[in-house]
Structures are given as C-alpha cells and as structure tokens.
Length: 249
View (cartoon, rainbow, N blue to C red):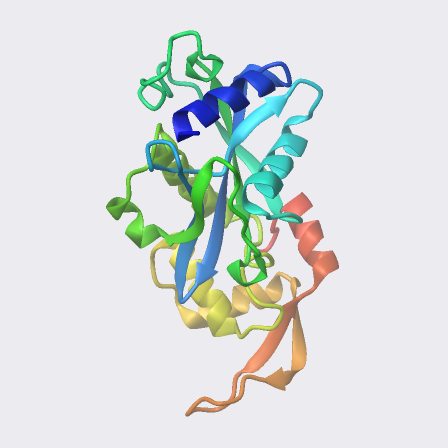
C-alpha cells in the first residue's frame, strides 16, 4: 500500500477518536556538542519533516495528549513539557494535504497547541511510527537545509524565543545536562540558548545564589588544567524554582 493510501485508511479508522480541529505540536529541545537540537520526524508521505505532533482525543486532556503523542510517535516519556503558544492561521495544512480530497478531515482548518520540552538526547531510545521514515535529532544550525512542512519552522522559532524569555525567571538544565556537570558546561548551555556569551564570574555567582545546585565531592578528570568541580541539581529546590520562579536571578 502506498503512503497516501495508508494515510487515508488510518484516517478513516481514527476520525471518530479525535477532535477534528485540534492538534498538539511538541518542540523537543536537546543539547549536544555545545549545540541545541530539535526532535523531528521525516514523513513517508511527501518526505517532509515535521514536529512529532498529533491530534487530541475526544476524552483527553491537552497535556495528556502531548505526552501520549511524544510517546507514540518518538518513544519519549517522562519529559518536561510546557505549553507556550497557540497556532491557528487559516490554511495551515492545506498545501501539505493538497493531494487529498477536500473532505479529508485533516485538511480542514485546525488549531495547534505548541509545547516546548527539554530532553537529554542520551536518554532517548527513539522509535519510528507507521507514518514516518525517520525520527532524528536535528541541530538547529541545520534546519535551513531541510524542508519543514506546514508552519512547523515558525513553531520551532517561537519555542526557542519562549525558552530564551523564560530562562530569565525559570531554571533550565535539569532535562538537558547529564546528572553531573561543571559550571562551565552549565554556562555553555545558557549561552547556547541565549545566543550570546555571558561573563563567567557573574554567571557563577548568580547560579550559585539560586540554591538549585549541589556541589559534589568530585572533579572532572582528564583536562590539561585544574580539574573543575562537579555539580548536580538539587531536585527539590529546582522544582520549587520551576513553580515559583527565580527570585535572585
């Protein structure tokens, strides 16, 4: 069965399960080699790349839908998710589904709820669902080289802007860094997200004053210079900072 016929068959089977005008599109950011990545699917139909999104079931909460979609389409679970924007321009999906009849429910106007998620790529055992050829982490610096469907480039750009705004009053890093890290590695993460260099002394002082770090009795071995101290996040204080914001940042 060709990809278009397969899609039509699954569409008919699923149309009674989902709200026809509502979807969710999680933007999952990862951090690797001092660069940000985003998780994308390359679809069998049209060979374009998409966010791992999907439709919302009629008996499902929005947050639960975003979690389910990520689990079913990419194999990712236990991920930090936060709603950040609504996307509802008319004709968002018409071109993508131009080969199909106008009666296709996917082709009708629909609104998508954008979520951003933070996830360590080293913890991911990615899967490929029945509609996709690939499920991969793509560096943000490479996005200009691939064809993104619908308005998903706009969604990614908005998610990154939101992440940059929220980094000023919410902690970032728990889901992106390994369990043990140095202050310079944490600073590099912040610089990568913000797109600019930060003063090392000011950053170290501010981040330590937040109370979200726990200094370990270990050092990073193997460098040419003095071995830097290792840190981990204080999970309880980190969660409080997520809920209440950063008072001393």
